[in-house]
Amino acid sequence: MAKPKSRYVCQACGSVSSRWQGQCPDCAEWNTLVQESAPVANIFAAKHNLQGGGRVVELVGLDAPSALPERVVSGVAEFDRAIGGGIVPGSAMLVGGDPGIGKSTLLLQIGAELAKAGRSVVYVSGEESAEQVRLRAVRLGLGKAPVRLAAATSVRDILTTLGGETPDLLVIDSIQTMHSDLIEGAPGTVSRVRASAQELVRFAKERGTAVVLVGHVTKDGSIAGPRVLEHMVDTVLSFEGERSHQYRILRALKNRFGGTDEIGVFAMQGAGLAEVANPSALFLTQRGEAVSGTSVFPAIEGTRPVLVEIQALTVRLASGATPRRAAVGWDSGRLAMILAVLEARCGLNFASAEVYLNVAGGYRLSDPAADLAVAAALVSALSERPIASDCVILGEIALSGEIRPVAHGPLRLKEAAKLGFEKAWVPSGVKAADGIAVAGFANLRALVDHILGR
Ligand code: TYD
Ligand code: MG
Image 1: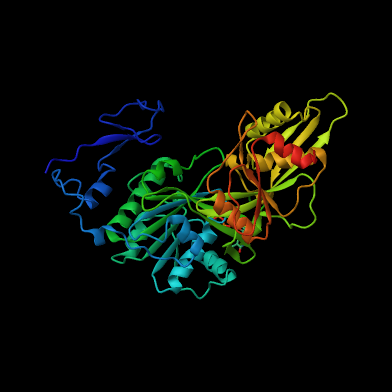
Image 2: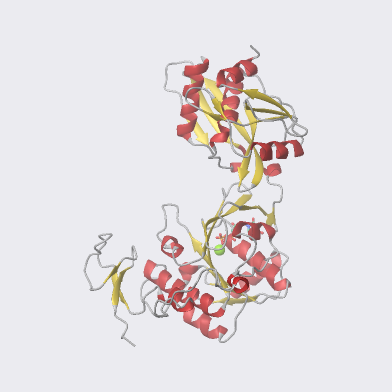
């Protein structure tokens, strides 16, 4: 067998050179090239026999049942949904998120559910002592779950301690606290994080243990290296939410074994994360008497409808000062566009008013289908005419003022009807759904006239 050639890998961008250089030829960072003997590709290549002399197999000849990974249902339905139906044995997952968002809590709960179902689970914390993790588990009401806890920061120690064992799930909290003796360096540096992850991913592939790596993401991107890890794992999940709001969304950013269009919704409560099977209830504030400046938009997350409330406030300015425009949970560029269309096509005047737009519950909307609901909230705020509280609004606004149809119309209306909404303002041409009366609008002016009672 040929002696493996040594190669030099940039620890900042991952580019490979055949000789050492002071500066990386790709990303121009200095002193980032480190000699590595085993190519990274070996983990995958060895497992999948990519080095079998370039042998060609027929796609149709592959044994279908064994090619389909059998998933392990974790018992936390929202988590299973986000990853595509359950945990794939031997897969490596990365769960990223801001510090304090609830990653440790989530994984402890998932581990406990699996352990209660008779699976073997090892939870390694590099941030807290085993006693602290145990206390947290007791507080979460999971004290009886047979999860094995360890406090360790050395990957070698962890793998040695596991010996020949193959737990069903191994949680590493967090990958930034781990170090591998293959590489020296300060804790949390890219090279160390990468080397540790590499060993753990290899363990997952060789033993068939599902490994979850927890990774902190810093606000300004990723000093600590999760970006580098994204290429090494099978699934990248992001745990998001505003810390001041209780809801949390688990989203798949990359998934080798499923789609990335489903989300899991949780609420952070006194006793840990609660699954939210009906997210609409979370984002709608108490709907009672209609107030001006609010509208409801039926959003779609993955294949699930979520009703969200949009709130607008306009404040007339006396002097000629430049009015403020602020949007929370909605793109401010798109807010400016809708205001411009309302002014240019519908003759409304927002020029001397400050405009604030807020999506309730800390939810973030990026779907252009919400344009019409945003416009309606703005018109309602400016005119102080409330929109009926049993009405949902959807439609995309073109610069011409035309209202365009949107995807998943029937699904959105069905969810609205289920939650007791009786009316919908929609792009003209959308068919009525069961239990909900639709009013179609061809352009924005027609909607403005309707709200103003003209
Ligand atoms: P944690 O899981 O430690 O976050 P991460 O691992 O992502 O850094 O959770 C941190 C926050 O969650 C903590 O500030 C308080 C809150 N929390 C609750 O509100 N209820 C609970 O039961 C728990 C365990 C945490
Ligand atoms: Mg933590």
